[in-house]
Length: 221
Image 1 (cartoon, rainbow, N blue to C red):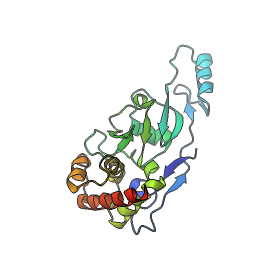
Image 2 (cartoon, rainbow, N blue to C red):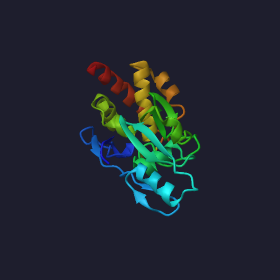
Image 3 (spheres, rainbow, N blue to C red):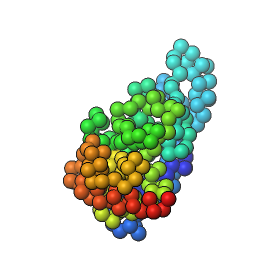
Image 4 (cartoon, helix red, strand yellow):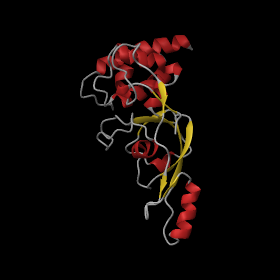
């Protein structure tokens, strides 16, 4: 299934490392949605067909749950387990790898941070089924939005991505910071990013990139 925006390897999506000219945003094909019967393994591309299969082939078993999620502006219907977190669902069912990489998986590092209705949230501690009816935004969607292109360029210019593991979460919170403060101070940026851990120690580079991008984004509005 195509339509999920992507751009930049440090964001889990292309290469944000190197010069701004090398950073890019593009639409990539992601995992096709396939519904699978957990009892016999039968697969179908239609959830209603799966429901019919259960009623006819496994009448005493519970039909697998399906969640309708809006991710980067695209509404998708995915088969999920009740205990799946949003991080697991983004990776296993949707095929996005930016904020969905498995890091601490216990809400301690901030690498999996996404925006839910515009507010930062840890996808590794949020159940996917709780996100129905809400707007989910990942680093892929932000990187492909032309309005936020200056943020991609600034991260490339200041080499804020480094190894890239924590970058999706930092980058996602960066959008929130600029949206909240307009032209944030260093203190405001550091306070908002305090929950995002970077083993490479690029905190000062994030500050520089966010402040530079904020000015460019404000000028473009």
